[in-house]
Length: 340
Image 1 (tube, rainbow, N blue to C red):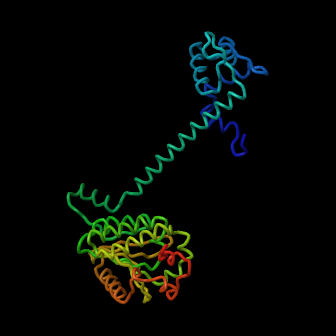
Image 2 (image 1 turned 30 degrees about the horizontal axis):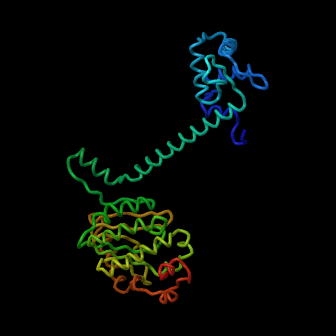
C-alpha cells in the first residue's frame, strides 16, 4: 500500500467498508471466499462458499439467492472471476490477482466520479461567479416593491468582479456617441493571462462607434519584468496589430502615453458612471454613478482629458522611440513592435 493511505481507508474509499469500518455484504462474502482459498488458488463451488458465509455469520438468516446476487456483483466488479464462465456449474476464484484487477477497476471508476464532480463544481463556480450581485439586488427590489431602484455605488473586490462591472455598466452598453476613458497607473488590474479577452470588449465597444481612450503612464516601462511573466506576448502582439489596423480604418480606439502627475486610476463611461481603482493587489475599487458623486466624476474626467491632450499615441510609436521611454531591449513592450 502507498504510504499516503492505509488499507482500511482505501477499502472505505472503494465502498467495501464504511467510516465506522463496518463491512459491506460484498466484502463479507469476498473474505469468506479468500479464507477458503489454497495456495495455489483453487476454483470454489457455490455450495462451499455458501457454507462458509453461513459459518461466519450464523446469527443472520442468509439465503442462497442472496449469496448468488452478491457473487454476481463480485464477478462484475472483477474482485472474483469465474473459472469457466460458459460452464453449467459455476466455480469461483479470488486471489491477489483478482483483487488487484477489482481494485484497479474501482480506482478508475472512483477517479472518473471525482473528475465528473470536479467538472460539475467548476461549472457551478463559473455560473455563480457570473452573478452580478448589483443587478440581482435591483431586480429583486423591483419585483418586490414594484418600482425600479438604481444602485449608486458599490465596492469591487478582485479582477473578475472589476471586469464584470466594466462589462455590464460600460463595455456592453457603449455605442455611437459614447466615450470610455481608462487610466492605467497600475498594470495589475488590467494585465494578466486573460488580458486579450478583456481588451477585446473595449475594442468591440469602439467598433460599435464608441470613442475608447486608454491613458497609460510611462511608468509601465518600469514594470516590464513583472509583465513578462503574466502576458501572452504573441496573443497581445496580434491584438496590438489588429488595433492599429482598426484605427487606420477609422475605429476610435487609441492608447496614449503620459508622464504627468498621477491622479485618478479610473475607467469612466461618459460622465454617467466610473470605476475608481484604489489598490492593485488585491484589486480593490469602487463603482459610482453620477447620482452618488457628480463632482468626483467630473474632476476625474477633467483630469483625464487634460493629460490626454498632452499625451502621445502608443499606436504611433516606432521601435526606435522605445529606448528613450525606458523600454528594455527584448522586453515585452518592445516585442509588440517586432516586425516578424
